Image (tube, rainbow, N blue to C red; front, side, top):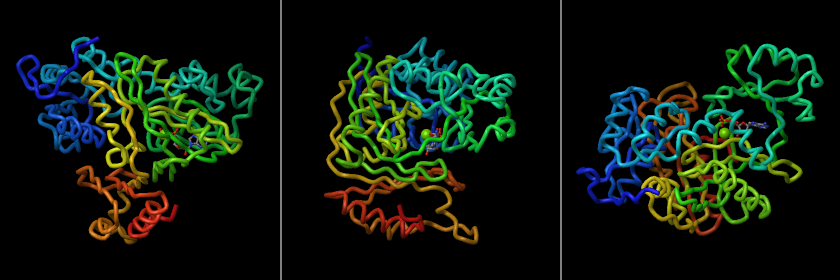
Length: 406
Ligand code: ADP
Ligand code: MG
């Protein structure tokens, strides 16, 4: 095991510096957490205006696979993490040969591919939605013909329709997915996704969605946050509620146990988020995982004694992990780009002053200058003494923003 990288020390003659691949909002919040603890930071992201690049000590503005960029990142960093799951796995392999990289390239590669991810979940004994992998026109044709023609479908033993066709790679915020009613729609949907490898998944009757964030150290120590109850709209996270009793206790316990076994099964180092579906009959199905902090965990910055970014810093630097404790019930409300436009499409500024007049309201903006529909611009976290008070505040915030009630 590597020695811990202590903040405020010199490593190879320069201040202890933590590196991050990717300069989005997750990288920005990681940088803030690392800097607060006394680390220097370096971000690699080609965008000169990237949210994390704007606040980091150093910002390397090259493509992710650029040899010189990667060499500079290694030269500056004592250890390196990632903030988006689509960072090219070969870049992580290069970095990992010379520096501690967490999470490792192998774990990230599994999370980058829905087929590999689902195979891993099954290997860990955690149920997934019935699905098949579609990679070739022959597989598609067999699937259109009928379930009997496809061994994989026979294995699943279920009708997959209505279903969702999802690209195996590069999907996020509901992008790269098409909902289909029956097998007749399948060919057109696969064409619509440019015939890339996909998984076809049965549409399940969701009673609720939830996620669990765990942090695992190189020594195998694991800590976790409480289960988060998530509400998605149009495939994008809209709201997260976290308080004792947000989900029935057995479901909370099963999802935490599942997330831990998924992390252990990958010999994972870093922060991992696992998303679940809760079905009407009370059963739990794992949906996907993110090898990094997660949007549903942003409330931890104000509602817990350690945030998911603090734990990302600790796992990366090889520092001890202590179980985080939530001290306030919390609701997180995402701020998407459409809030920056009025009904006629004119530019507006959301009513920050009115929002900040609400008790226990914390505003986070990610420093993105151009607002677009569906783009994550920031979030609000509301905390309070009890969930009834927090819900009342969140309802007022949603009304001020013109967001439909939850
Ligand atoms: P993304 O990578 O875009 O987050 P997800 O697979 O998590 O993709 O899908 C986004 C959302 O779509 C989910 O949070 C859920 O609300 C809905 N969804 C996805 N798969 C299913 C399914 N099999 N059955 C019902 N709803 C689903
Ligand atoms: Mg998702």
